[in-house]
Amino acid sequence: MSVSYRQPGVVLTDRRFTVPLDHADPTGETIELYAREVVASGRADEDLPWLVYLQGGPGFGANRFIGRPAWLGRALKEYRVLLLDQRGTGASTPANRQTLPLRGGPAEQAGYLTHFRADAIVRDCEAIRPRVTGGAPWTVLGQSFGGFCTVAYLSLAPEGLSTALITGGLPSLDAHADDVYRAAYPRIERKVVAHYARYPQDVERARRIADHLLTHDVVLPNGYRLTAEAFQSLGILLGGSEGSHRLHFLLEDAFVRTPNGPELSDAFQEQAQGLLSYAGHPLYALVHEAIYGRDGRPTGWSAERVRTEFPRFDAAKALAGDEPLLFTGESVHPWMFDCDPALRPLRETAELLAARTDWTPLYDPARLAANEVPAAAAVYHDDMYVDTAHALTTARAVRGLRTWVTDEFEHDGVRAGGPRVLDRLLALARDEA
Image 1 (tube, rainbow, N blue to C red):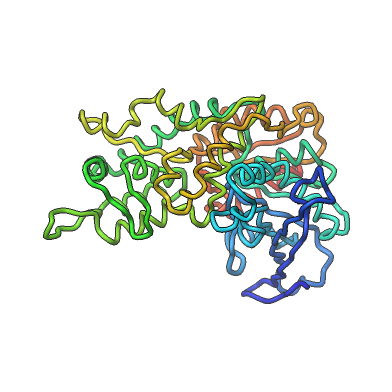
Image 2 (image 1 turned 90 degrees about the horizontal axis):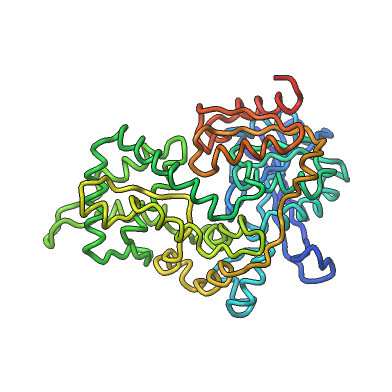
C-alpha cells in the first residue's frame, strides 16, 4: 500500500517493489526496492512524464530532500520524479554487516553481492517502470555512479528511456580498475596542491596530525582505528565544491592540551569518524572496485596496488623529509576493513570479491554507437572522482550524446549548480542549446 504525505511545495508517496535478486532467474529469490515519488503541490493529479534519479555511489540511497531544493525544483516543473534507493541501499533490502550473515559465510555473501552492479540496477529499473509509468519510457538523471548506470541503461535497455541525462558520471567503456586509479592519483595530487595553495597553513597542520598518528594508537569513539592512511583518505572531501573549505576547518583546531600532552580533540575525532565510517554505506567499500571488473581479470585491491606506483602518497616518507602530506580519496583499501568496525566482519567477503574474475561486461559499445536516445552529460574539468579524458572518450563513443564541459563546478555540480545544471542538460538533449 502506497502512503502519500506532504512537505512544503511537494507531495511525496512511498513506493515499494519486489524484484528478482538475479534477473536471469526471475522465479528465484526476490528483494525489495524502495523509491520515493515526488510531485509538485497542485500537480499531483496531472499526467506528467516521469524522471527517475539514480544516485552516486555505489552504495548510497537517494537524497532525502526536504521540499524542492537543488535540481529537484527544476525537475518538478515538468516531471513527476522517482528517487530510487538502488538495491542494497537506503530503505531497499539492505546489505551490511548486520544483514549479510543471513546469506551464510563469506563465500555466500560475496556471491550475493555480485548482483549489485550497474546491470542489475538497470534491470531493476526496467522491472518497475511498467508499474510506475504504465509502460511509457522515462527520463533518467544519473549522478556519478548513477551516470555509470545510465550508460549501462543505454547499453542494455534503451527502449526504456525517453532521455538520458548524466552529471559527472561517464565511465570508461574499456578501462580496468588499474587504469582508473593510474589516472586518479595524479588528479588527486593536483587537488591537494590546490588546497595547500589556498590554505598554506594546512601543510604543517596535516603533517603534525599524520606524525601523531604514526607514533600513537588512536581509536575514535565509534571504534574506528585512526591511522595515518585513514587520515589521508579524508582527501575525499576535495572532490566536492565546498570540500577544501571543510577540510581546512577540520584541520585548524585538531589538537588540545591535556595532562598527557597534546591529543587529538574530541571535536576533531567526532567529525573524523563521521567522515570515515562506512556504517551508512558499506556497499561503497564492498563493491566499489567491482564496478570496474571486466575481461576475466580480478580487481585485486587495485587502488592499493597502484598507490605503490606513486610513492609521494607514502605518509612516512613525506614526514621523513620536508614534503607536504598528500591526501587520498575516492579509493577503497584493504586496511579499511581492519580500521572500520562497520567493515571488519566483512573483510573475507571483500577479499573474495577482489579475487573474482567472472565479471560480465556492463557496456555494449556497438549499441552505444547506434544510440537513438536523446542524451546529454555534464563533464567537470579535472573531476577528482571521474577522469575527464575517460569521460570524453566515452562521450565520443555514444552516438548523439552532447556534452557540457565546465570548470564552474566540482563533481557535485548537480547539487551545487542545481536548476542551472539540469536546465543546460535538458537543453542539450533537446538540441535547444
